[in-house]
Length: 423
Image (cartoon, rainbow, N blue to C red):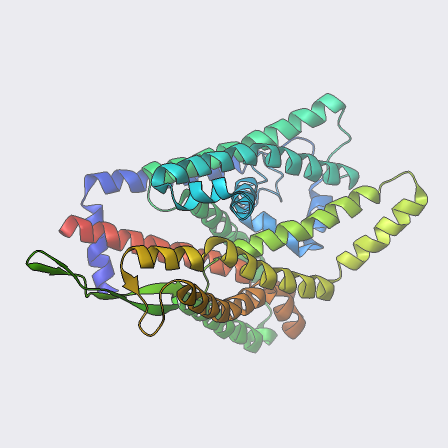
């Protein structure tokens, strides 16, 4: 820790890094100001009841920094951009051209790929804004707007999401850290004072043992998140010796680091998006003038809002999407081909197809641990509520995962900048 603070001092003494940090802080303050600007005519009481009865909307509220609870102009946060990025990466499995652009064309290809993701995020933001505002209007949380007023609000919310995406890109380019991750991080941290105030107002001295148990569980969960986030399986790689003239090249041993959780928090966000869709549809149909359709939709809505059903389906989707996303982002055949072209091999494994099969088996095994961990983290609030019976002590595992991942990434970036300036 002392070494880290020494390196932090080196970074802060560098003018360019100070400017990057100031720019990042200013951009995040701008995000918080935008999240405080609401759309007009909100029934705050009904909105609070809707969020309390739906843990997924509550989780989205955390991601947006309280934007949904205030129905701010940036209520969607950066979720449309994240969804667009996931969809584009899924398209790489179906389009060889996109796959080549993302994996083989270097930095220029990745920049073009990111540009396509930005284009796709605009219609996605529009659809999400339309669906969400329709849901809120049917729930009488916002008034029945005229056609023009409704679409003006839809365009405002869409523009707010695009503006946040732009701010995130600016942070990545001119600030420090990943801009999109920092915006989500700022949103999570911003709601902590509110939760602390609620906890203090409902403090019961008779439940001190429960509070202590909660504190121990929180520390244990944070430690587990750090361990799993940093855990990796090293695959030894040796480069064959090559003689050129009077010099011998190669013969160096290194390793391929395979992370235990290669997909990060993406499967949780993807599963969340999938689970929200039927809820929005059934809530919309429940307001239908056809009584039969409305009754069926209401019954389905009650079933979908069952806490344990949510937990089981949520865990299943997170588990499946972890494997699916890892298969999209990690290509054993491509890595095997690159090793063979570079004159490298895994000791005891034949180059080519045998190497790709070996890497595939290892990734499948370690992803099992990562998928189980992400699934448990996702349904942690349901587990804690079932064990304690206290909704105020829910540990947001997904929020903890994001916060810890962002903090670790920032520490690594600061350490890298300090090392570069020392050299």
